[in-house]
Each structure stands twice: as C-alpha cells, then as structure tokens.
Length: 562
Image (tube, rainbow, N blue to C red):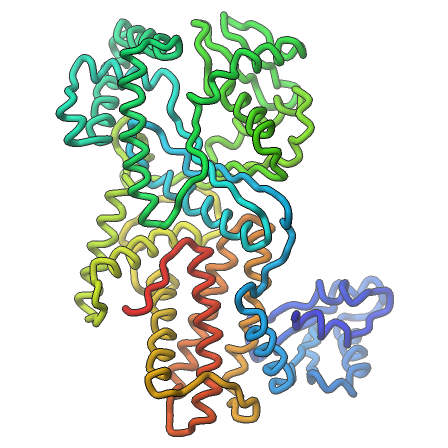
C-alpha cells in the first residue's frame, strides 16, 4: 500500500500518467503544509500558466474528492488526507504484512556476493575496518530482505611483503611464548618495529622481501609460521564479529588466489595488455585516465593487483553470481576502477554485474589512522571505551536491566555503528568518541531506548491482559502523525537498498522515534479507557516492529530493557 500511489490516481494532469504525478508528490517539511504537497513550478512551462494558477485549477478539479482536502499556497497544492480512511488503510496493511513489510522479490533466485571488512592478517582490525564492516553487513541484510541469496566474503589481506616483515621480525625479536600470550597485539608490535627499521635499513628490507619470496615458493618453516599467524588473526577477528552477530561464508584471501596468478598473467600477455616498464610488468590505462596498473614486480614477485584479478575471475567461475559488491575505503576507489577496466579489457562479460562501494576514511583527532606507524584506533579498544561510557551513563540514569554488562555492550557498540551509518556522506571525517557515544540527540542509544520503551509498554499490557486491537473510531486525531509514518518505512528501506545508503533507514528511525515519543508524552497509552488503550497499543506494536527492523538493518542489537 502506497499513499502517494493512491493519491496520484485522484489528481489528473494532462499529459501525465499516475506514475508521473506520484513522482512529483512530496512530503512537506512541516505538517502545517499538509500530509503531501504537489509543487506546480515544473508544470508552468508546459501549461504556460503561473504555478499558483495551475494549483488553483487542480484544486477546483478535486473539489469532490473525499480522500483529502486541498489548500493552495504560493504555487503548492497542499493535500490534507482523510485521517480515518488512511489510518485504516495503513494499519491494515502493516498488520497483514509486518513480517516482510516493504520487502520485494527483486533478487529472487539470484546470488549476490558482498566482500567487506577484509581484515589484514597479523594486524588488529581498526575503526576503518569497522566502517566497512557496518556498511557491508547492512548491505547483506538489505539484499536478503529483497530476495537475494547472499554470500558474505572476508577477503583477507594475507599476502605480500608485509608478511615477510612480520615473519622476519618474529625470527629476529619475537618468541612463541609472547605470541601465545598476546596474540595479534604481539604480531602487530613486531610489524611496527621491523617496519620502522626497514625505513633506514635497506638490507633488512631486502631480507624481508626475500622472506616473502620464500613464502611464495613454499618454504616449510616460513609457511608454518605464516599459517600460525593467520589462524591467530582470524580467531581474534571472529571474536569481534561475534559482538555484531556477523559470520562470514568465505574467508579466502590473497594467498588463496595467488595460485592462479600465472594463468592471469598469461591471459593479460596473450591479449597484449602488458608491457615492461623499469623492470615491472604493467597494464597501461592512461587513455582511460586511470594511470598504470602494475601486475608483477621487478623481482618477479606477485602483487595484490594480480591476486585481485585472479580472484575476480575465479570467484565468477566458482559462484556464477548475479552481483558482486566490493565494500572498501574511499582510498581504493581509483584502484577498483583500474581493476574493473582491466577486467573489461580481458573480455570478462560479467563486469556489468560487479560494483564497488566506497566508505569515507576515518581518522582520529590526532591524525590519520595508520597501522604501519602504530597510531591506530583499534575496534576492540573502541568497543571497550564505548562500553565503559555506556556503563557510566546507565549508572547515572539508573537501570533495572538484569544483565547490565550485556546491555552496556549493546548500547555502546550500537552507538558506534549508528554514528557510522547515520550519514550518507562518504567524505573523510574525524572520529570523535565522545560524540559517537553521546546519549543526546539523534543517536543509537536514543533509537534503542525508544524500542525498549515500546517493549516495556507491551509487556505491561500483557500483564494486564490488554491486547492490541484497533477501534478506528476511538483513535484521537494526534495519532495520525505517527500512523502516516509507518508506510514511509517502505520508501526508506527501498531507497537504502537501491542507493546502498543505510542513512535512509537511520533518518527514518529517528523520525519514527521522535513521533512516537511525542505521542507517548501527550497521551497515556494504558488508561481506564480499555478501547482507547487497546487501539493505542496497536500503534505501539506497529512502532515496535518497525523499530526492530530498523535496528536490524543498521546492524544494531535491540535491547528490550534499558
């Protein structure tokens, strides 16, 4: 059920279909301007009349319409819907379709692969990974809601000279006992130490490169250390993902796809796409304004671009997917343009099914995040800090929740995720922890608190044997502001899915919370008037269901008590 669709059928404009009219109907920014408005400015040139005259003419044609009354203001035709009629229409639609409300079978029978998070072995996941993880998981959940079979891919950064560095550092300065005790922390510290020394010690850098070449050639000792470090890194990552209830279907990374590099390079050479430049093998993409893409180093060692091309080819061979979406930081945007262009030049006929989404770079107030230098905001540290802040706020406000530690995690981590997803901007930004964990304004805790409030009301009603049940004649006029928000969830989830932008859902959730809390402050939901209480409880039930969906698509937990 679509209110705009119903209304557009009543408005007849020469030369325009119902769908055309529906597209220009807007939700006004202020309720005094109506429930919907039709700006007539775009029609002025076609009809050679002023916008206001067009609006007045349309108003005259609608004088017998019973679904809404009209008002003309400065070229706008404002529409005020019949509250009783549309309340019944909306609430019946929500009740009958709540389980899959707003879902469509766009992806029915189709497979979508989504690659996101993509952690680096021997390094702790940082806030940049959290950004990609939040967006990627949100995309997965939305694609599933729209009918796709989704496979979650965590393409590990588990190959390259950096692993020669970590292994060399371990052999020079490390010990098995320290790695067993400290895990990824120890591996990252070893990497930072050796990387700093490599900047001034060319011999050490050469040793690290040779160590990686040994790894590529299957040296037993080097491979055993590498596999151990990889296992430690994945287990630590899984612990972090468990906090978000995320699990991946495919953990294969660069090291797996490196085995196909030879045939990838052969294909590139056979198609005449490569040339040597200062000893390196590259694909020249200058005529596409994409520079040059190196596919083999001067030493003969493989490079990440070759592995990514190998992965691109063999993923399709294996999965025969209908859609592949890469989610990475914005700094990789041009790189993926290069990879996609080379894929087209290779003759891969599925490149129109491959997409890339960029998330903005995240930095600390002190400067850019860099694991190479060690100045990094780790996900585990952010989770801990957010939980501590949530604990302080809950202690201050008071809570009757039984599992306080679990609630602190849900609120703190949810606040971080909401901060990431609430903005549609992918520009660089500074990550301010205090603002992220604020419990004031449009925040994750506000959304979770409102959801918990609806749960509390419904629980109390159940104890009193009050069942949510609508009596349309009993609904006060002030409930319509909340009711008419319900179907806008459909627009929010659809736009978020089509545009890869969860902020539509975040903004919708804030509007729904605001309107519900306003109604809650104005009226007693449970009162001596049983009929009114049951009707209001049905609105609480609908709000509860929609907020729970919003929390799910925003990769947040839905605590029932706060």
